[in-house]
Image (tube, rainbow, N blue to C red; front, top):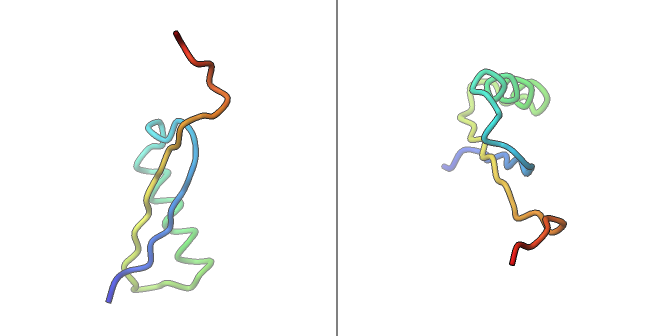
Length: 55
């Protein structure tokens, strides 16, 4: 059985610290009552459509 995956979309996710990721994991576990269940959190960044194109 595969663990639940939570995908966080955002910008500048390379600046998210490991301690904040652990904090988020704890909050997700408490909110969704996932005690004892493996959990994966993925951080995904996308292309900014409003970023100026350089020639």
